Length: 544
Image 1: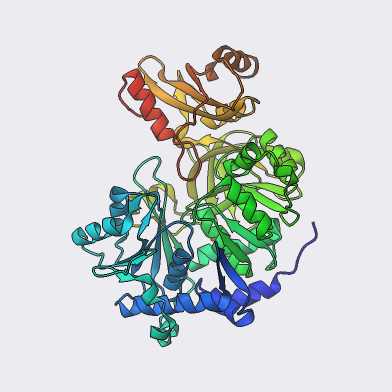
Image 2: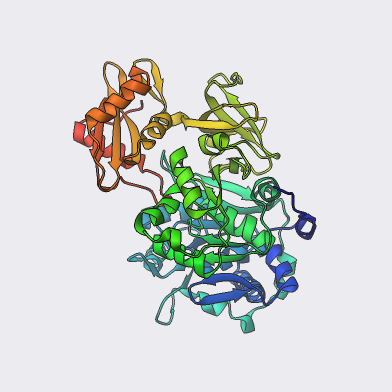
């Protein structure tokens, strides 16, 4: 693939903070569309004015550089406006998932010390503004709740979002004086907390901007003429990589989808001439299952897709590529470091479909054993990452930071993998914390799940461990079969016997046609699956 000249973009944004970007596009192409949400179309000039007005409004409320602004809502223009408003004046954004409920909201608001919260009034049958006010009454830091999306007039104790973004009432003169440095904290992005209490991951303007060059120049090869669809939750790191690191950095048009729907997904790609998309494998698969006429749809502009979040087996990747007729890559990312490994658009099939690629040029990776020594090529170890996109520290958790990020700046990711070829492509085996030790043998759930997912009858497979007094741990495999497909336990066991070591044979195999529990990201909710298993077995939870 021929290289493109990105010098005009990088020169344009050299030394920028995140909030500078909108202003530059507003000057260069003020009347071109920046954001599309349903029937709403917002130009770069309008977006610049809206974020500037809200930024001034936040300053008028008494907020200052370094204060924290909680931003709560699905993929709506208001949340991106609030995020960029904070970035323009050095206020630290705290994105909050709209799937969370009161207990989770209270923890994130209090742990981050939010002084102000921007929230949707009601969404998904939950009154966020009411919950936020109840939290504010008990909070030592939360002083203001700014509400959008309410049908009736917003009254005290709430502040109207619309009133703060009124251009006529904005004092934009304060913004220039309040601008942050590129090394200042941009946001605190919380982990999903599937293995414990959510951790606040601190990123600077620099750490978010730095990966952009490598992504786009080395792998993605995008330009400002591309159009991107955001269906992943904006509160995930990959959501930020889409709307900030790519769309707004290059000046692309961004199409927002409130929440993923397979029919709307294809409709928007067709209507808005979307050229690229990032999503978990489920988002690529559901339209294939639910839309029999998918191959007849007019999608000539759709040329590039990124599969992330969890492993997509080779046969599934081939199906995506053939059905949508697109270049397709796989990506391994994290809240702590953004995109860490990627396959490339011109990789041979073996690397493209059987690995998660290799690190970008600005990312160092080591594969280490439990003693911190690098493992020989082909042997499994923990992936350690170091680079400018790696997070600064965990908010309010110095002990955890010290444990997971060493003195040399390497973040110990907990991902277990191995180098499989001379190009340095890495195959992910499992999560370190998910390694199940059964009778002295290490069992990597990712390896087992990938094996089962390659069975043509299988839609999803999840392996979890449970305690055993003799072996230390045993395993349970839950299998969700495709609609109209049959698969017996005996057939599964036969395939294990034929292909894998005997100690990898699951002790329990559950086969079902109903969906397995999943998280908002689309990943399997292993904590819930394991909890239900322990309850069924009458066992107490303990470390494996």
